[in-house]
Image (tube, rainbow, N blue to C red; front, side, top):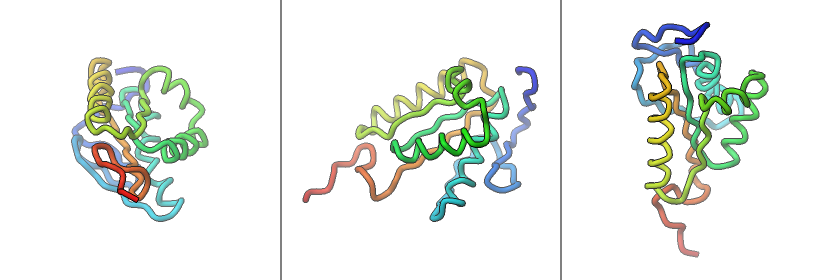
Length: 139
């Protein structure tokens, strides 16, 4: 582990609340307000602050931009973390197979680099463009 890293002991700080959750947990954070959206981004903020952790951001362009804007308000290191590959930003593609392959590649790269934990934040943008693997509704 790098300097300043925290040992990962089977649980990871959530950031959205004061809770810790077991590594490997799958969580859903539904938001309706800007404050709730920002609280969800704290999940990634903790990962950026810990050099042993890697993060993957997946979503439509507007949501990814919002997340990056919030992260840049709280950390001067966002661009460095992106350049290091510790934060990977993936667009929401129209093909499920491409989206899944990119997510798998990002996770595999993090594991190869020795990630103690991988934080994944996905924002599907329900009601927007069709989800990966779905056709647009007929008009």
